[in-house]
Length: 209
Image 1 (tube, rainbow, N blue to C red):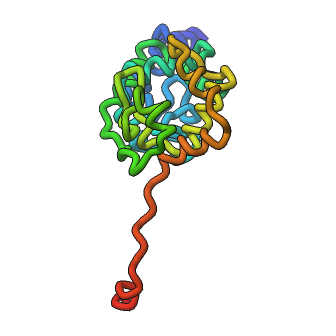
Image 2 (image 1 turned 180 degrees about the vertical axis):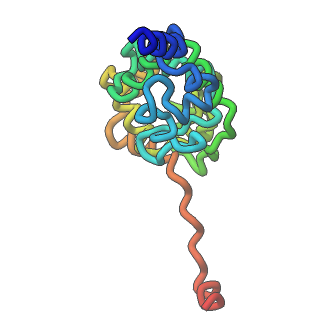
Image 3 (image 1 turned 180 degrees about the horizontal axis):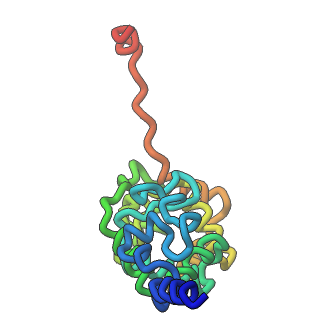
Protein backbone atom coordinates (compact mmCIF):
# COMPACT_ATOMS: atom_id res chain seq x y z
CA UNK A 1 0.00 0.00 0.00
CA UNK A 2 2.79 2.37 0.97
CA UNK A 3 4.66 1.54 -2.27
CA UNK A 4 1.54 2.34 -4.36
CA UNK A 5 1.14 5.66 -2.58
CA UNK A 6 4.79 6.50 -3.22
CA UNK A 7 4.49 5.70 -6.94
CA UNK A 8 1.34 7.84 -7.21
CA UNK A 9 3.01 10.73 -5.40
CA UNK A 10 6.00 10.60 -7.74
CA UNK A 11 3.74 10.49 -10.80
CA UNK A 12 1.78 13.51 -9.63
CA UNK A 13 4.91 15.48 -8.81
CA UNK A 14 6.26 14.71 -12.30
CA UNK A 15 3.26 16.48 -13.79
CA UNK A 16 4.48 19.83 -12.47
CA UNK A 17 2.62 22.57 -10.69
CA UNK A 18 0.45 23.41 -13.69
CA UNK A 19 -0.86 19.87 -14.05
CA UNK A 20 -0.40 17.50 -16.95
CA UNK A 21 2.86 16.16 -18.28
CA UNK A 22 5.36 19.01 -18.79
CA UNK A 23 6.81 17.11 -21.73
CA UNK A 24 3.68 18.02 -23.69
CA UNK A 25 4.36 21.73 -23.07
CA UNK A 26 8.10 21.82 -23.75
CA UNK A 27 7.87 23.81 -27.01
CA UNK A 28 5.23 25.58 -29.04
CA UNK A 29 5.45 22.89 -31.71
CA UNK A 30 4.83 20.16 -29.14
CA UNK A 31 1.81 22.05 -27.81
CA UNK A 32 0.45 22.52 -31.34
CA UNK A 33 0.67 18.79 -32.05
CA UNK A 34 -0.14 17.38 -28.61
CA UNK A 35 -2.76 19.79 -27.28
CA UNK A 36 -0.74 20.33 -24.11
CA UNK A 37 -2.65 19.49 -20.95
CA UNK A 38 -5.86 19.21 -22.97
CA UNK A 39 -4.58 16.17 -24.85
CA UNK A 40 -4.92 15.22 -28.50
CA UNK A 41 -8.52 16.45 -28.73
CA UNK A 42 -7.19 19.99 -28.17
CA UNK A 43 -4.29 19.80 -30.62
CA UNK A 44 -4.09 22.94 -32.77
CA UNK A 45 -3.18 21.00 -35.90
CA UNK A 46 -6.55 19.22 -35.86
CA UNK A 47 -8.26 22.37 -37.16
CA UNK A 48 -5.46 24.67 -38.26
CA UNK A 49 -3.47 22.23 -40.40
CA UNK A 50 -0.08 20.60 -40.03
CA UNK A 51 1.71 23.81 -41.08
CA UNK A 52 -0.75 26.35 -39.73
CA UNK A 53 -2.38 26.81 -43.13
CA UNK A 54 -5.97 26.63 -41.84
CA UNK A 55 -8.75 24.47 -43.18
CA UNK A 56 -9.82 26.77 -46.02
CA UNK A 57 -13.09 27.55 -44.25
CA UNK A 58 -13.66 28.72 -40.68
CA UNK A 59 -10.37 27.68 -39.05
CA UNK A 60 -7.95 30.48 -39.95
CA UNK A 61 -4.39 30.17 -41.09
CA UNK A 62 -1.94 30.95 -38.28
CA UNK A 63 1.37 30.53 -40.08
CA UNK A 64 3.41 33.69 -40.30
CA UNK A 65 1.06 35.88 -38.24
CA UNK A 66 2.61 38.19 -35.64
CA UNK A 67 3.41 36.40 -32.36
CA UNK A 68 2.01 39.22 -30.23
CA UNK A 69 -1.20 39.26 -32.23
CA UNK A 70 -1.61 35.48 -31.90
CA UNK A 71 -0.92 35.60 -28.15
CA UNK A 72 -3.50 38.35 -27.71
CA UNK A 73 -6.12 36.32 -29.57
CA UNK A 74 -5.49 33.34 -27.31
CA UNK A 75 -5.93 35.59 -24.28
CA UNK A 76 -9.12 37.02 -25.78
CA UNK A 77 -10.58 33.54 -26.21
CA UNK A 78 -9.78 32.79 -22.58
CA UNK A 79 -11.29 35.99 -21.18
CA UNK A 80 -14.33 36.03 -23.45
CA UNK A 81 -13.49 38.96 -25.71
CA UNK A 82 -13.70 36.44 -28.55
CA UNK A 83 -16.73 34.21 -28.29
CA UNK A 84 -15.85 30.69 -29.42
CA UNK A 85 -16.75 27.75 -27.21
CA UNK A 86 -14.23 25.29 -28.63
CA UNK A 87 -11.32 27.72 -28.60
CA UNK A 88 -12.15 28.84 -25.07
CA UNK A 89 -11.99 25.23 -23.89
CA UNK A 90 -8.63 24.72 -25.60
CA UNK A 91 -7.00 27.95 -24.46
CA UNK A 92 -8.06 27.72 -20.84
CA UNK A 93 -5.95 24.56 -20.55
CA UNK A 94 -2.85 26.55 -21.59
CA UNK A 95 -0.80 28.68 -19.20
CA UNK A 96 0.47 32.12 -20.19
CA UNK A 97 3.83 30.58 -21.04
CA UNK A 98 2.15 27.89 -23.14
CA UNK A 99 0.27 30.54 -25.10
CA UNK A 100 3.48 32.48 -25.71
CA UNK A 101 5.25 29.33 -26.91
CA UNK A 102 2.56 28.25 -29.33
CA UNK A 103 2.11 31.81 -30.64
CA UNK A 104 5.85 32.07 -31.32
CA UNK A 105 5.82 28.69 -33.06
CA UNK A 106 3.10 29.67 -35.52
CA UNK A 107 4.62 33.11 -36.05
CA UNK A 108 7.85 31.41 -37.11
CA UNK A 109 6.23 29.29 -39.80
CA UNK A 110 6.33 30.56 -43.39
CA UNK A 111 3.16 32.44 -44.33
CA UNK A 112 0.83 30.76 -46.76
CA UNK A 113 -1.05 33.79 -48.04
CA UNK A 114 -0.67 35.49 -51.41
CA UNK A 115 -1.79 39.12 -51.89
CA UNK A 116 -5.28 39.69 -53.23
CA UNK A 117 -5.36 39.54 -57.00
CA UNK A 118 -7.76 42.48 -57.10
CA UNK A 119 -9.76 44.64 -54.73
CA UNK A 120 -12.78 46.92 -54.87
CA UNK A 121 -13.21 50.60 -54.13
CA UNK A 122 -15.11 49.52 -51.01
CA UNK A 123 -12.16 47.50 -49.73
CA UNK A 124 -9.72 50.31 -50.47
CA UNK A 125 -11.90 52.79 -48.63
CA UNK A 126 -12.78 50.71 -45.56
CA UNK A 127 -10.06 48.09 -45.11
CA UNK A 128 -6.83 48.89 -46.93
CA UNK A 129 -5.68 51.55 -44.47
CA UNK A 130 -5.19 48.91 -41.76
CA UNK A 131 -4.97 45.57 -43.57
CA UNK A 132 -2.92 46.57 -46.59
CA UNK A 133 -3.75 47.54 -50.16
CA UNK A 134 -3.82 43.88 -51.19
CA UNK A 135 -4.59 42.31 -47.84
CA UNK A 136 -0.93 41.90 -46.90
CA UNK A 137 -1.49 43.31 -43.42
CA UNK A 138 -0.33 46.37 -41.55
CA UNK A 139 1.30 46.41 -38.13
CA UNK A 140 1.01 43.77 -35.41
CA UNK A 141 -2.49 44.94 -34.50
CA UNK A 142 -3.76 44.66 -38.07
CA UNK A 143 -3.17 41.15 -39.41
CA UNK A 144 -3.06 40.17 -43.06
CA UNK A 145 -6.30 39.05 -44.64
CA UNK A 146 -4.54 37.41 -47.57
CA UNK A 147 -4.32 33.70 -46.92
CA UNK A 148 -7.55 33.54 -44.96
CA UNK A 149 -10.67 32.09 -46.52
CA UNK A 150 -13.64 34.21 -47.62
CA UNK A 151 -15.82 32.23 -45.20
CA UNK A 152 -13.55 33.07 -42.26
CA UNK A 153 -13.35 36.78 -43.11
CA UNK A 154 -17.13 37.02 -43.50
CA UNK A 155 -17.66 35.17 -40.20
CA UNK A 156 -15.30 37.53 -38.38
CA UNK A 157 -17.02 40.62 -39.77
CA UNK A 158 -20.31 39.20 -38.51
CA UNK A 159 -18.71 38.47 -35.12
CA UNK A 160 -17.44 42.05 -34.83
CA UNK A 161 -20.83 43.35 -35.88
CA UNK A 162 -22.64 41.26 -33.24
CA UNK A 163 -20.20 42.12 -30.46
CA UNK A 164 -19.00 38.52 -30.24
CA UNK A 165 -15.49 39.71 -30.95
CA UNK A 166 -14.04 42.71 -29.12
CA UNK A 167 -10.71 44.07 -28.04
CA UNK A 168 -9.48 46.29 -30.87
CA UNK A 169 -9.13 49.23 -28.52
CA UNK A 170 -10.55 52.01 -30.68
CA UNK A 171 -13.60 49.91 -31.68
CA UNK A 172 -12.81 50.50 -35.33
CA UNK A 173 -13.83 47.01 -36.36
CA UNK A 174 -17.18 47.43 -34.65
CA UNK A 175 -17.79 50.62 -36.61
CA UNK A 176 -16.56 49.25 -39.92
CA UNK A 177 -18.46 45.96 -39.68
CA UNK A 178 -21.73 47.62 -38.69
CA UNK A 179 -21.49 50.02 -41.62
CA UNK A 180 -21.34 47.14 -44.13
CA UNK A 181 -24.41 45.59 -45.69
CA UNK A 182 -24.53 41.78 -46.07
CA UNK A 183 -23.73 42.21 -49.76
CA UNK A 184 -20.72 44.37 -48.92
CA UNK A 185 -19.49 41.79 -46.41
CA UNK A 186 -19.57 39.16 -49.16
CA UNK A 187 -17.77 41.53 -51.54
CA UNK A 188 -14.95 42.31 -49.11
CA UNK A 189 -14.55 38.68 -48.06
CA UNK A 190 -14.60 37.55 -51.68
CA UNK A 191 -11.29 39.30 -52.37
CA UNK A 192 -9.62 36.48 -50.44
CA UNK A 193 -10.80 33.84 -52.91
CA UNK A 194 -7.94 32.40 -54.98
CA UNK A 195 -7.92 33.72 -58.54
CA UNK A 196 -9.47 31.55 -61.20
CA UNK A 197 -7.02 29.93 -63.62
CA UNK A 198 -6.90 31.67 -66.99
CA UNK A 199 -9.26 30.27 -69.58
CA UNK A 200 -7.54 28.16 -72.19
CA UNK A 201 -7.78 29.32 -75.78
CA UNK A 202 -9.59 26.92 -78.17
CA UNK A 203 -6.43 26.37 -80.23
CA UNK A 204 -4.48 25.46 -77.06
CA UNK A 205 -7.16 22.95 -76.10
CA UNK A 206 -7.01 21.37 -79.57
CA UNK A 207 -3.21 21.15 -79.45
CA UNK A 208 -3.32 19.30 -76.14
CA UNK A 209 -5.54 16.49 -77.46
